[in-house]
Length: 486
Image (tube, rainbow, N blue to C red; front, side):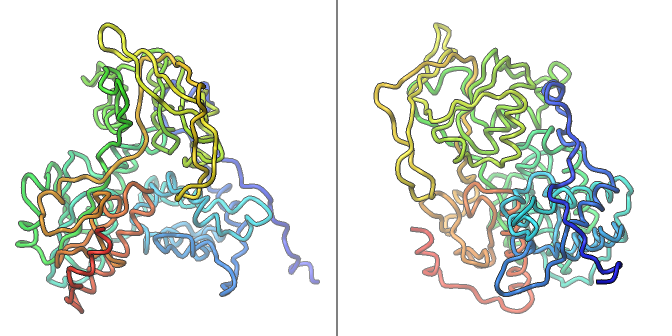
C-alpha cells in the first residue's frame, strides 16, 4: 500500500476534557468542564471514521433526536472549518451550546458511534459544545437570512427547549412567531432547573438572543391560563403550540412531609438558579441547608440537588435511592462528578417517614433497606423492602427529586383539550391535540424527560404546524385522541 494511503490507527480514548479540581469546584458555581481548545477538538474530530451509510446498521446521526448531520459537521471540523461546521449544526439545532453540555449523547449519537464498538466513541457532544462556544466567543454568528413571510402567525406557550425549538424552526420557514413565557427569563428548565455549574445562564441567554435575532418575539411574564387563555391566542393567531413543561413536583406523601426543611427539587433549584440564593445577602432570597442534606432520587435532578447542597456549605450531602448504582437513571458523567465531589450514595434504601424536632424542623429520616426483584414495566429490577431493616439518617434538609408532573394550568383553562391519566396533553405522532390548531410537545405531552427529547418533539411539531398552515388544514376527529387520553 502506498505510504500516503496507510490506514491511520484509531486513538482509542477521547481526548481529555479539562475540569475544575473537585476540591475547588465545590466552593463555587463556575462550570465544571472548562472546555477543550481548537487543536484538541480537531484531533477528536479526526477520530471519526466518516462511516458510510448502510441499512444494516445505525450511525451517529440516527441517534440524534433533532436530526443533525453529524458526519458532515465533523468532517468540516477535521478540516478546521469551524464556521461551516457550525452552519451545518444550526440547520437543525437551535440550542447547540445547551445540548453540547446537557444532552445524554452517550445514549444517543455517541451510543451509535462505530468507533465506540471497540473503543471510546467520538466525543460528538464535546465537539458540538466547542463549536457553539467558538461561535459565541468569536462573534461569528453569520448573517441571519430571513425568509419571505407566509402571512401566518403562531403563538408558542412556554420558552423552554420545546417551545424555543418550535419558534426557531417556524421562523426560518417564514411564519411570524410570538412566544409567551410565564417567568422573567426565557429557557424554562434550562434556567430554573439546571445549576450554573452545569449550564451557565449566560450561555442560555446567548442562545435565546440568537433566536430573538432570527425574528422570534418573546414576551416574558405572560402566564397563559391567567393573563389569557389558549382560546384567546387562537383568536389572534393561526396556530398555537403548548410547551409548558413539567413544573409540578412529585411528593412522597409520607408522614412528616410538611416539616420545615423539606423542599421539592423544583423549589430548591429555582431559588438557587433564578433567585441567586447562593449569593445571599447580595441577593435577598436566603436558603438554608444545614450540616447534612439528604436528596431523594437518582436522576439528573437529584445529582444537581446533591451537588448544589455542597456548594451551599453542607458538610455532607447524601443521595438516598431505592435501587442500585447500575439502575441510577442519571447520566454517568453526572454520577461521576457527584462522586468526585464527595456526595455519599445511600443505595438500595427508601424513606419511610420524616421525623421533626420541637420546632417543626426536620431532623431525621427513617428509611428501609431494599433488595432488587424482577424487572418492572420500566425494565429495571423492582425494589423490594427488607423487613426489619429500618435505619435512621440525621439531616437538616431533605430535597425531594423523584420526578415532576405536567404543568396543569393550560389544560385546566382549556376544557376541550384532552389529557391523559397522567395529566399530560394527549397528542398524536405529529404533536396535534384534540383541539384544532393547537399542538403540544415536550414534557407537557410526554411527562418529564430530557432536554433533547423535548427539542425533538418541537422539531416534529414544527414540521406538522408548517404543513397545517401552508398545505393541509385537516384535523383528526376528537375520537382519535380517546385512546391516548385513557
